Amino acid sequence: DAGVTQSPTHLIKTRGQQVTLRCSPKSGHDTVSWYQQALGQGPQFIFQYYEEEERQRGNFPDRFSGHQFPNYSSELNVNALLLGDSALYLCASSTTGTGSEKLFFGSGTQLSVL
Amino acid sequence: RKEVEQDPGPFNVPEGATVAFNCTYSNSASQSFFWYRQDCRKEPKLLMSVYSSGNEDGRFTAQLNRASQYISLLIRDSKLSDSATYLCVVNSLLGYTGTASKLTFGTGTRLQVTL
Image (tube, rainbow over all chains, first blue to last red):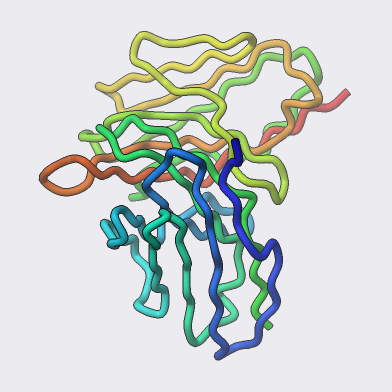
């Protein structure tokens, strides 16, 4: 049973470029959440996708957008990259429930913006 | 005020020591609570859920006080392999239907266990 998989594992971009990160959820999971983790900080919620729609969004600008596909996999897109976007981007999957479901994380994509 | 607050540490303790981490949360409507463990540059992994009645998993004991909006984690007989960052996590329901939820993480408390 494959867990949450993310690609790529590492990425180097320059300011102003655009990036797409990918995530496949754990088998049986239908909800994908994306988090940004800067060095020395806890993961910060970006948004959550369920049934191919963005269900909730954290305090991130519109430069951050996403998509969920019918097979539940998801993409995170970041436009006009800034130096401050350098971080570990984590994808987490779960099943939609009553608020007690647990998140399972992928190993993340380390994004460096130069 | 941050939604979830933790002392970032680091906590430097000798092997065999008992160490306790605390966490407070601001949303009184939060539904469920967890401790996650994160090793350096790795993804967070679920350590244990936290219940009001208190729960234990081997050397780890977690406790929730809803009235004080306070969560704790106690590690007994610390091992070198316990060195990691421990993230306090709160799950809150979203919207009116309450069918979606969001996990909010604290900044984490770093533990370093030494010989």
